[in-house]
Length: 192
Image 1 (cartoon, rainbow, N blue to C red):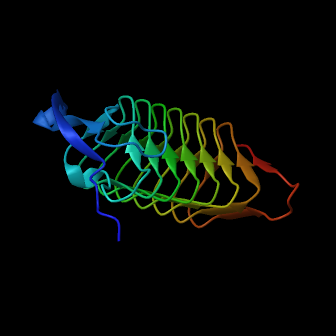
Image 2 (cartoon, rainbow, N blue to C red):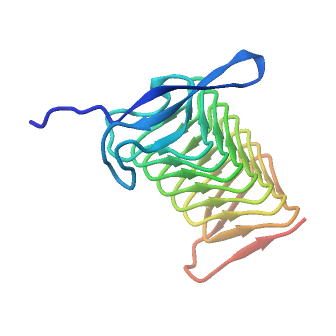
């Protein structure tokens, strides 16, 4: 059985957020995925924010992960993205640009949250779903499969979106709405 080799550690470089929360820049102790030994990464509050026992999970740029949030599997947090609270970024998911994921939100599979999008509360984003623009996903909303949500769209409550659905503009989907599009070539657009 191969010997376990820790992949990163906290540096002495600190960043203080509001209310005195201190984050530490990370740096790679070995090569893995696209990361090379000595590469500086993003910021964490504590070591438990980023899995140490996986080869690929990483935080780059000014990405910040804090609170009880966790990044694991092959997931990445990049750019100026923030992940905090009890949020989980797992498997091959990506949170990038200025996106923010917090509360008990979970981003999984190969899902991507980017630009200025917010995902929070108990929301779930999975499959190959893409959330971008100024989109807001919250409450108990569930976005999965090949759904694309962008623009100023708001998805909340116990709404569920799946299949090949595109939501954009100022769309608002709430309460217990279910929106699907299971035809491979079909794209449903819902505008408010």
